Image 1: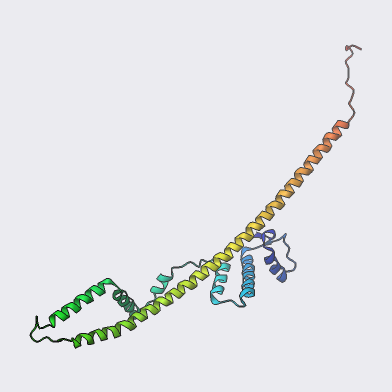
Image 2: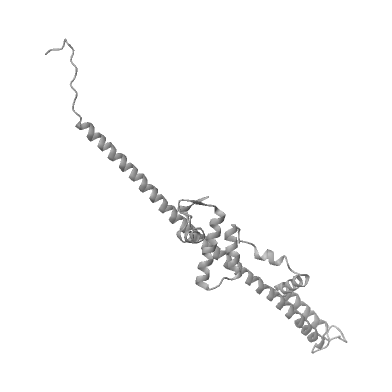
Length: 231
């Protein structure tokens, strides 16, 4: 339960709008308090932007349910890949490596060397290597769309990562605002308590001063004397 004094005034206004008989002297359960906080944040976002996006709705829902938004987008995205997407990623990864460049250069050199008259009297692909050009054209025609498929998946992953970062940043900003509000309310509450303590101490000091002054004004009682005491 949260004391009503610790609730932010803007949130108290939403509570009073639905429950006019509620006062700051009462208490409020945390689930209802989080619900009203979510309504206030939603109202602020709608005022600033006009309407809420699906990402902001998810942030508000996570704030009400106290759930974490942080997640590994790469693991979740890569875990749902199909066989064709996995092949496209492997081809794109291998096609953009030095291993592919060096091995392809070696293959081209051997092809040209074998099809010269110095090695074979009747080469199967003599100069100007028409068969080699056909193979390279077919390889480029197949490799280009496969690499584009992998790049499209990477763009989707980057967009998901950006949306996730936006959600985390938005929730962090809202949580920081709530922390500032709580700290302000706690400081105000502590100041009120300190003032009350000072007033009580002041009252005690005034009572002590009144008692001392009253005792100083009392008449002195005569001392009883024994019969043997001198006159």
